[in-house]
Structures are given as structure tokens and as C-alpha cells.
Image (cartoon, rainbow, N blue to C red; front, side):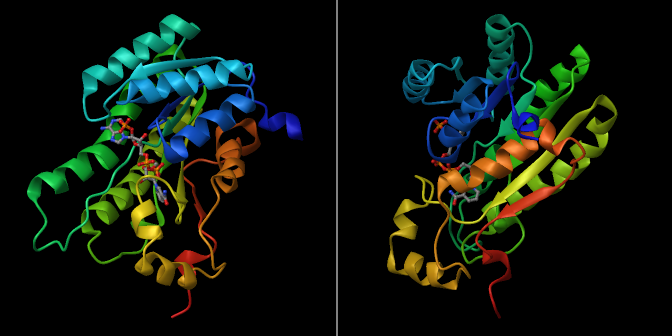
Amino acid sequence: MSDRFDLTGRVALVTGASSGLGRHFAKVLSSAGAKVVLAARRVDRLEALAAEIEAAGGEALAVAMDVTKADTIQAGLEATIAKFGGPADIIVNNSGLSREDWFTSMDEDDFDLVMDTNTKGVWLVARTFAGALTKAGKPGSMINIASVAGKRVGYTMSAYCASKAACEHMTRAMAVEMARYNVRVNAIAPGYFETEINDTFLNSDEGEKMRKRVPMRRFGEHEELSGPLLLLASDAGSFMTGATLVVDGGHMWSSL
Ligand SMILES: NC(=O)c1ccc[n+]([C@@H]2O[C@H](COP(=O)([O-])OP(=O)(O)OC[C@H]3O[C@@H](n4cnc5c(N)ncnc54)[C@H](OP(=O)(O)O)[C@@H]3O)[C@@H](O)[C@H]2O)c1
């Protein structure tokens, strides 16, 4: 059974690999045998991670990519093919950011930035990378990182919540279109995991109050996303498409 989780011979793109969950995902996929393509805007961080992965015996490529800019995504695809001989057959759409404000005072540019990164960015990367897979006639797996914020709502989070709800629903639409090509498309909806996106909030008094509302009374450890990621990336999840795995310590269903 454990062989079904093996990713030897696979090539995995991870967007947003320069920090937080993306950095962790890249290391997990490499440990499972995949060659990894590390994409984000802060290339110095990607190169340091690539060196770390190669020192541990893996293979990695760092590519500068802004998921809001189609030309950088196309360049990332071409670099992947040049280095690894074909397109990535695991695509982890992880890049994301948040801007928070009450919607009545939120700046329009901030709203656009959140939607462009978290929703349109997923679509642009998927169009290019999944498009290359179908063109090459290769099976694959795409994993979009959504959020429990796409299922529930929070004060000052209207743009982020909308962007993640759209990301999750787009996952289903993409799954239906990709099924005939044997490309599976699923999502992971994490609860709260400490990273640069939320460390100030999670370590504040408000963050502490929220931690107490999580049924498991804690935030997640990055390692607790490894199993769900590998399930969706590998043949262990070969009949799963259009699904969302919620990984949140029960936060979604905290008691009324
Ligand atoms: N941490 C949580 O509790 C949590 C919960 C639910 C969902 N998520 C989601 O998980 C994903 C990863 O977030 P994180 O928590 O790991 O936060 P993070 O540490 O802030 O990482 C965000 C990553 O996204 C990249 N990124 C942002 N804008 C980009 C752009 N235009 N082009 C390319 N890359 C871009 C950043 O890289 P560069 O700045 O170098 O480009 C960075 O690597 C996000 O989609 C987030 O919404 C996180």
C-alpha cells in the first residue's frame, strides 16, 4: 500500500515555495521522490531551499514566478521542461496573500490584489501547467490550497473569504473538465497554521481567543498537512477528484 504514495519519477510545481506552507510542501514532495519546481517572487529564498533539498539528495529548480503575470508562468513552464524533460505532473497552487479591512473602507486595489493572487493566479497557473499536461497526454494531479475562510466568514476578511471560496469552487469546475484527461484536481482547506501570513495575528490576544475556539484547542503543525498533500498528489488518491480536504482541528464546526 505504501508504494501508492511514492512519487519517484514525478515532477511537482509548488507556487509560493518561498515561505510557510509552500516551503513545507516542496520538502514533503521531494522526500516522497518527486523532483520539485519552486516558484515565487523571492528567488533568493527559493534558491536557498533548492540547495537544501539537493543537499538532502533531492532535485530542485528555482523559478521566478508572479502568479498574477501570465508571462512569468509561461517562462516557469519552459524552465521546467528544459530542466526535467517535460511539464510538472503535480501542480500545487499554493501562492496566496491576504489584505484585511472592513469592506466599507477597503481599498479597491487591495481587493483586486487578493482576487488576482488567490483566484485568478490559480486559474492562470492551472491554465498553463494543466494545459501543458493535457497537450502532452500525461496524467497528473493538481492541488489548490483553499482555506476554511472560503467556507466560513470572518470580520475584515471579505476579499480573502471570497477569493478562497472561488478557488475551491473553481477546483470542482476544473476537476470536471480535466477528468477525461486523467488529471485530478482537488483542494486542501487548511485551518490556522502559523506562517508569515498570520503570525502577528495568531500571537496576539485576538489570536489566543481564536485558538480557544478551535475544538482541538490549538493551531496546526505544518507536518499535519503532509498526509493530505501526499494522498492527493499520489496514486493513493487515484479516484479522488473535485474534493476538498479540510485540515483544521475541527475549527469549521466549532460549537455555536
Ligand atoms: N497559514 C494558514 O493558516 C493558512 C490557512 C489557510 C490557507 N492558507 C493558504 O496557504 C497558502 C500559503 O500561505 P502561507 O500561510 O504559507 O503564507 P506565507 O508564508 O505568507 O506564504 C505565501 C506565499 O505566497 C507567495 N506569493 C504571494 N503572492 C504571490 C505572487 N503574486 N506570485 C507568486 N507567489 C506569491 C509568497 O511568495 P513571494 O512573496 O516570494 O512571491 C509566499 O511564498 C496561501 O494560499 C494561504 O492563503 C494558509
